[in-house]
Length: 142
Image 1: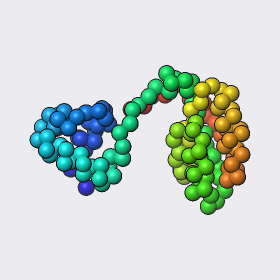
Image 2: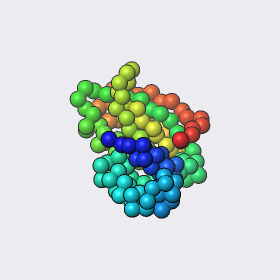
Image 3: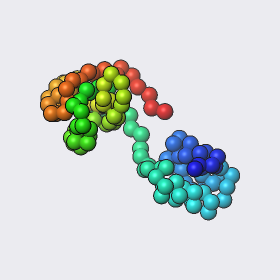
Image 4: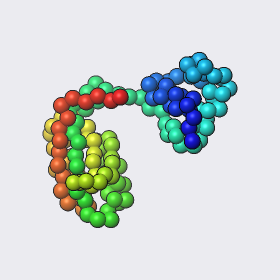
C-alpha cells in the first residue's frame, strides 16, 4: 500500500523521470536516505516499472498515428499479443471490453506505411477477424 509520500514521489517522477534522489528528497522534504530507500522499494515492488524518455513522434519521423481496433477470435489473445510485439509500428497494445477486443496505437512514417501495417500486417494475422482505423490528427501525452 502506498502512503502519501510514495504517491507524491511517483507523481514527481512522472513529471520528471530524471530527478535525482537528492532532488526528490528536497521536493518531498524527506532525507536522502529515505528517498533512496523508498525509490528502491517502489521499483522492487513493481510500482515503478522503468524510466523512459518521452519523445515527440513527428520529430523522430513518425508523422502518422492511428488507433486501430481489432476484433479477434476467441482464446487467441496470448498468441496475438506475441505477434503484435513483432510489429515495430505498434506502440501500445490493450485488451479491452466492448465493441472490439484489442486497441492499438500505431505510429508510422506516413499514410502509406500506416496502410501497409493495417492492411498487410495486422489484417493478415490469423486471429484478426476485423479492424477499424481511427486517424489521430493531434495528440498530447500527460
